[in-house]
Structures are given as C-alpha cells and as structure tokens.
Length: 398
Ligand SMILES: Cc1ncc(COP(=O)(O)O)c(C=O)c1O
Image (cartoon, rainbow, N blue to C red; front, side, top):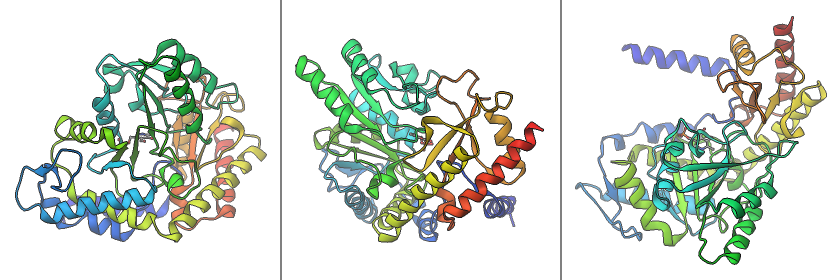
C-alpha cells in the first residue's frame, strides 16, 4: 500500500479518537465522500452550462452534457436550501476564492471595503494586510462595543464619513446574531442622502450558513447584493465555496470566477456540493442545526459558570470565544491549544477583541459544536468536555 493510504488511515484514527471543537470543521456523510471521490474528477469543464442565464453560456471542452446537468441541479438545490431566487455560482474552489471573485466582480483596486478586522473576529480575506484583499483594496474596519458586539452606530458613522464602495458583514469568530437588516437600513439611508452613492452590501455567511439554512439565524437574502459562503462548516459538506448574488450581478460574478480568478471547475466537488444541499433540505439536518445551537449555549454557560470570560458574555450560534486575558493573564491561546492537543481535544487559538498579543500567540480560544454534534454529542456531553477543558487549563497553571 502506498504511504498516502497509511497516512489517510492515521488521520482517520486521529479523527476517530479526538474531540473536535474547531468551529469551522465538520464530518461529511459517506455520500458526500462518494461524490467527491467519483469519476467526475476526470472531467475538464471550463465555462458554464449552456442553459446559464448570466450571459456566460457554454464550455470550452466537449463531453459536458452530464456536468452541465449536474451543475444546474446543484444551483437549483442551493436556491431551495436558502429559499432564494438569487443567481448562484457553485464553482468557487474555496471561501477565499469566492470572496476574491466577489470583490473583483464589483470593485476596482483601490476602492474602500468596510469590514470587521481579523482581530475582532473577521476573516483574513476581509482585508487583512497579508491577504490579497488588503493588498488590492483600501480597508476600513468597524468596531466592536465594550461587550464585544458589532457597533452598528460605528458602521453608520464610517459609511457617512468614508463612503465605502462595499460594506462587508460576516465573521469567523463572532458568536452573536448579525443584524443584516440594520446594515441594509444604514446603506439605504446613506444612498437616500446622496443619490450618486451606490455601495454594495456583501455578506460572507461561511460560518453561519447552516444556521441560516435551518432558520436559526436571520437570512441575508433579499438584503445583501452578494452572499458568499463555504460549504464545509455548519453546512457539513465538501470543502468548497459558493457565491449568490442579485440577478443583475450574475454576469459580473460569473466572469469574476471564470476566467478572472479560476480555471476549470472541480466537478467532483460540485457533485459533493449537490449532495450537501440534498442533505441540508432534510428535516434531520434542520434538527441537527438546532442541536448544534443548543449544545453551544449549554457548553458556553458551563464555562461561564466555572468563571471563564466569554466574549459578549454568551452565544447565539455554533461557537464562542473564551477570553483568557483577564482570568488567566499568564496563559496564551497557543499554550491552551497545544495542551488540549496533548489531551486529544482539538480547538484553535483565537484573537479576542482589543487583543494585545500577536495572532500567533493570542489571548483566546475559539470553541465550536458543529463537528461533535454530528458525532451525536448532546448538551450533557459538551458540559462534560467543558469540565475536562477546565481541568486541563488548571493543569497548565499549576
Ligand atoms: C468567514 C469566512 N470566510 C471565508 C473563509 C475562507 O474559506 P476557505 O478556507 O475555504 O478559503 C473562512 C474560513 O475559515 C471564513 O471563516
């Protein structure tokens, strides 16, 4: 047997034997794995199905009738999942590719994006100086209030002052409901006061997409001009990205993905995305998401009861961030992550609002419940894990 399959088996054992609390991970079904491991990996299909309405019709290779049907089927399913008539592009290879293409579709290098900074819970691709988003665009960040929640007043002030070409909502480590309606209203008001001002409202729902699909978080559809996502977090699907947009932006989004940012689509991954959507439409999936949120609230409450400082004082979704800076000033997120690893618990260090340490050290730990809920964990299991983590952290202090 090749070394690769030895390593895959080792990784399978690791996944079987660890408690997985990384908020962006999950365990896919056998059917998703079947689709992603299928013969579709052999097919080149640069371009779009001939039925595409965006003006980008047709592939650059022959033999695409089956993949045309697959891609359209996949798009239809995702519109059903999010109960939307938005145009959808299922070709982005990842969340990062989806975000870059969304910016390239509607912005010009040098334009201003107003987003949440990486330190406050935003994502690298939302304008970090080390990412292409921060290199191509001028980035302004909106602030959090003293409790760690988005300061919508600050968004309104910055929209008025800087007139950004895009306002971006969405995060990697934010545990509260994001009020998309409020941001839409801020932009509508700014546009009413200056009719030459035409900003785009983009939502990166990568983390909370599963909650939106199950009605456990308010939807951005109907409010945002562009919605991007990954498919592998709470959506519990194959690794990948997607872009939804208002129909009038369909042509720009399609050409931003191909030919601007990508070449041939990964049709085996698109098959995996279609299976993911079929699963997301089932009542079992909706119940799964409700359990994810119940588990997150129960585990978070346990940490608070044990004296931990949780950013914003709680959670509305699948994750929360423990802030060690006041309760355990001598510990870094990195130290806790490493020690949890030694005890077969996988979580990740995370910056906290008003972070004083570098992103490599950090003062926080992010915890998510999506993956272990897939493995059948209920509230009592997560409470037991919280107690175990507390023991481990107290061991580091000793
Ligand atoms: C909010 C958000 N957007 C985008 C991404 C990027 O996704 P990918 O890792 O697939 O490029 C992530 C990944 O964690 C994320 O949390």
